[in-house]
Amino acid sequence: MRTAMINRKSLLVLLLISTLWISFTVFRSPIKLSSFQKWTALKWPDSLPHWNSFRKAVDSEASPCSVVSAAETDLKIRKILKKMDQLIPPRPFTHIYTTSSAKQSTASILNPQITYCRGDQLDVLLQMKDHLGRRKEYGGDFLRARMSSPDLEAGASGKVTDFNNGTYLVSFTLFWEGEVSLSVLLMHPSEGASALWRARNQGYDRVVFKGQFVNGSSRVDTDCGLFLNSSAELCRYLNAEDQEAFYCVKPSHVSCAALTHMYSKNKQVSYLSHQEMNLFERSNMAVEIMKHSNVIRVTKCNTKTEAVKEKCKPGLISTVPSGHVWKYTWNPVSCILTPVSMKDCLSGKLIYLLGDSTVRQWIEYFKTRMQTLRLVDLHESGKLQHQLAVDLDRNINIQWQKHAFPLIGSLVYSVKEIEYIARAIDRTGGDKNTVIVISLGQHFRPFPLDVFIRRALNVRKAVERLLLRSPDTMVIIKLENTRELNSDVERFSDFHGYIQYLVIKDIFQDLNVGIIDAWDITIAYGSNAVHPPQYVIENQVNIFLNYIC
Image (cartoon, rainbow, N blue to C red; front, side):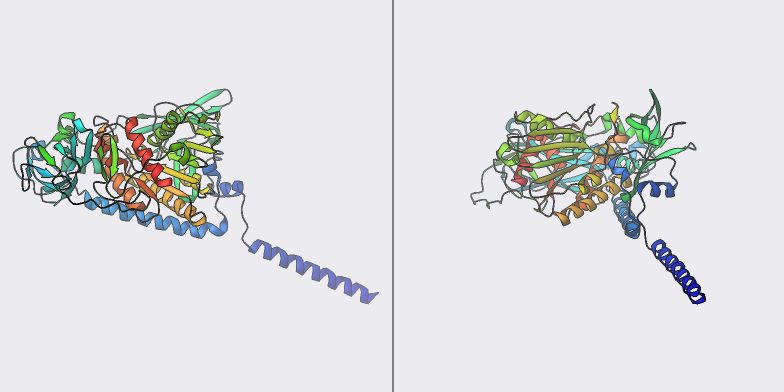
């Protein structure tokens, strides 16, 4: 009996020790928290909306990698910003008379001839002067060079080389025969470009966002933005994986998850001085420098056979200019565009058009060109609604979706289904019949450049992940295009767009993606519209078709 009791006690002690050991092992091991547990641990103002882009939580094991990735991204952002700072140094001025003047500056054709040969390069030397006729001793002027023959429906951009001493070399490749007009516009003097650069990076409040929250049968509107200088309680909508956030003032007694719609409006705020504002009056922008002898004659005097070009495909070296327009048709420098049957090319394809409304124009173009495409009602509303067009017989699926914040629009748009491009790419399986087209830029112009750089870097990382798991997937970057000259300059100047154009080319230059240089194309066409005309879209789509078929 005594022996039995001892054995029973020993067994109980052994069971207790075993239980403690198991509990210690379990709690010592990393445990994946549920989304709710993680959000609670972060102590955010309120629960997050149920959008896919914001619901994805990071596993505890992956957190160190995320921290390292975020640190690497911050370092890359600083490096790119430093490069841009060196490109656009401060240019303070005491009076507008000391700034660059198109009227006083001179343009001289080097080695002028009576006629020129097609294929030759023509160089123009610019000497910039101020309004008092004094030579400028530094560079940084924002110039736009273009050659054109309106009767031939031809055009091309010119290459500008800044010697940083007030002189510039503008190089034109003479692509076609006939009379050719040369143009060099002083878009902004260097002092204006410097002022825009400084002002851009000073604040987030040039555009105000208004979020609409549903509260039963009523609606509550509050201020939203990338940054809010407010003491009120805020809702933070965090793209946790890429450390991008958007904020709204939290309505009283309303959940953050009740945010459904948004719109924006310009705020009457400026970071430019009154003197700097004078530089951006319409009469001081896009002023012609080449006033005389700007028409030349080009003939076919070279009899040598031109080298045979290969068909256009992703990965070819980018050139400046990247091509020219002839009879309203785009002709690349480094490759040839062949006729492609749109229906045959797109058969069996899944096409994702991700980004702003300049790539939404593509799906609208596809609908006009292919009568067999049918729109699918996705039960959304507004101009920025997700669009899906299908051709069931040919198994064609084309869809467009807007990028996430910032998204500028005076019309109300839904944010219930809003998603960051990087997250959309991450949920894409990809294969040889999947094509992704990405377009970013116009909506980022009013905000500090680091916002755009971070977004572009995060998209690049998502593309890298996609190409690792599905290397046959085709990814195409449609670069930003030019827009109206009379737009609100501090917010939307093409100078901001050009800086973003340089940044995104730099970020994606060594990745196996196709590039559609919409910036160079719209300059060649002489298009100054945020939404280029259909003949420009047609030629962008033609490049796209040559890339994928």
